[in-house]
Length: 149
Image: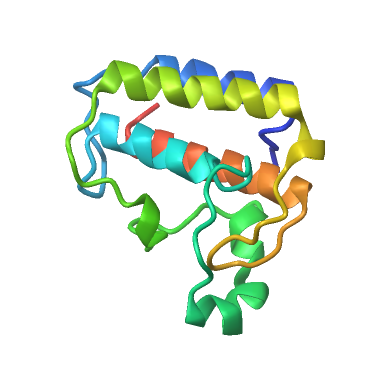
């Protein structure tokens, strides 16, 4: 599984983000491209130690057992539920969101796994930096595929 802490997969993701446009349409779901970028950016904030969403009750009971879904080689299910705090429903500026996400990927790269937050994923619980790196890649890959890039 590719890992966002590795430079080559991170560059691949950045190039795919660059191929998006404000007119890129989703193959599934209701988000527009700018909202997807904002959603992915908000998700990046958790392992970067910038956001601390609370653990949900269901996650406390089954999250540990389900956590391999986040970082294994199998694709994420379409229309999978998400963390309530990173649902983006308002209009967003595509250029600003794109720039912000690319900056966060660059910071994640420069900080490395050593600076990965120990705050648990709101559903899956505590993850190692390697698991976060794989999950971040998988999440971005999922949404970029959603928009055909």
